Image (tube, rainbow, N blue to C red; front, side, top):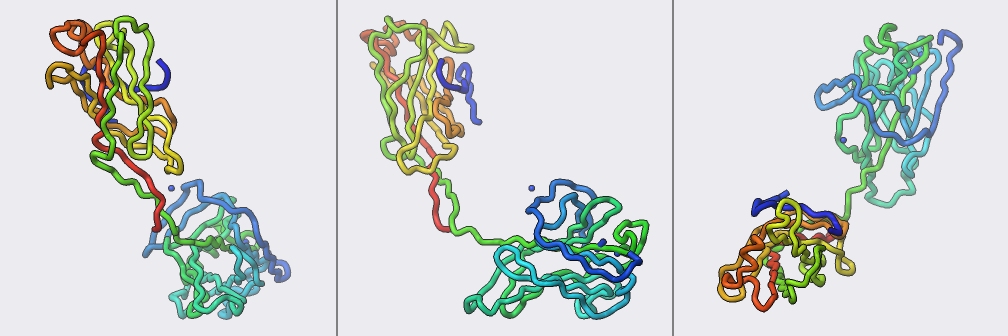
Length: 350
């Protein structure tokens, strides 16, 4: 048969994330780099919501390298980097090599990002940032990324964010740890804008949608060939559907039973094309009484057309051909699909 289908069998249902050299004091700055994602899980430490992860990729926004850490070791005043641009705004790194005492930084390296040149921004401005700060570990050829998972809101009242306890001095200065090599150490920042989504995709399930019953009468049944036949397409919800069957049987029901399948087809114009939930009562109509043969099917139908779900045995062919039972009358049979629930997807304000 054409297309892909799932069978419910014999009336069984189928439902279907600061390099530091003893040479003269030198400050080297590296700006830019490439945007990266953490793709390795090395060491992981969580402390009061702060997460520290070693990764291969260098920071994408700014790197400051201090060649001659021993020159400034123990100094209390901060080092402020040159202005750099990231995500359309201007920034500086602010580094305290003995920690910021006003932010619990005693005994730690403290590192911050400060927003600069904000005078031209409109009144009431704010910038929401996913901020990660880094310490290079040349021994391991990795960067220790530090974040607390919260969005930092920069505005006129608070232009500086960072970590008072970026890394303990006892760790940084321990030569076995590998953060200071030849008196050189590096720090960095990665600044990504968090812009709240203005739209959302909303999936709604509609019970008994309009025009949800489709009837298909097949004439001259006895003359039909051993192949799949398909009904006209019918629209329910935002999607077109069709019925299909092989008069000689299909799958495990062949050659003793009559199959029936529901296929999802294309979408109506301007519909949001996603997987579609379809729940249906599939019936072979009894043309003399209300003793219809019926099965219930429910499944997610993929975006592509031609995917069918149904059964290989809605009725045994022997029972079908017994004219006294009322399913085959005047060499005609009648299938019916009652779509009892479908999903509709819309893009709406968040």
